[in-house]
Amino acid sequence: MRLKNKVALITGGNSGIGLATAKAFIDEGAKVVITGRNPETLAAAEKVLGAGVVVLNLDVTDAAATEKAFAEAAAKVGTFDIIFANAGIGGATPLGDTSPEQFNRIISTNLTAVFFTVQAALPHLNDRASVILNGSVHAVLGAPGWTAYAATKAAVRAMTRNMASELAPRGIRVNQVTPGGTKTPIWSPMAQTEDAMSALEARIGGMSPLGRMSEADEIAKAALYLASDDASNVTGIEITVDGGMTSAPSGAKIFRAA
Image (cartoon, rainbow, N blue to C red):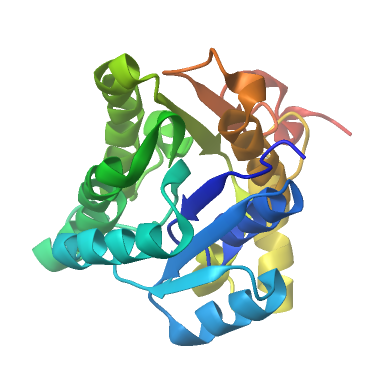
């Protein structure tokens, strides 16, 4: 039980990578608090995770509400050993067809809220705790039409390193998981039928040498390592789970004859 007697808080823990990570942490003995904005998916997550999970209906873009909710959660379950700032949204922002509102919505959720999630948790964070940020390969891919999303993830990449330095005097480790294409509900707006989703998975998976998209629990396992004492002297790094998409792109499945 790698997280026995640990308390973990996961933003966006009601679906996708956050939910898979909550399951992994609970299975390893942690007491888990999850946040989410959607009451229906929160209720479904609570049912899946069991009675021990603490559920917070919270929009993390509201910094004051986040501070209040984290304080209430810490009073209820104890101070935090693990923070996974996972909540985020997708969305294309093509040049010539993007409003300031669209752009700022992605920035406020994927960047600003990540900073204020850590800041809100800090008064309730134990020394030698683990902070994990959720990045993306979009920070380095240069994908057309995804400027705002990529900019937030590049900023999170820098934030990981800065926070690792800043929190080191307390022994708090700050690291990042960096997913490639991963099977989560974030893709639903782009592939609304089963056939469309299969085609999308084949296309995105083909961009990596291992030839497939990641499962959410594969990202969760990377987060579990960073959360646990197995990574007790690891800080300021990112673990990329993308089938080799960014480290060995010339080996991508789409370039192979068979």
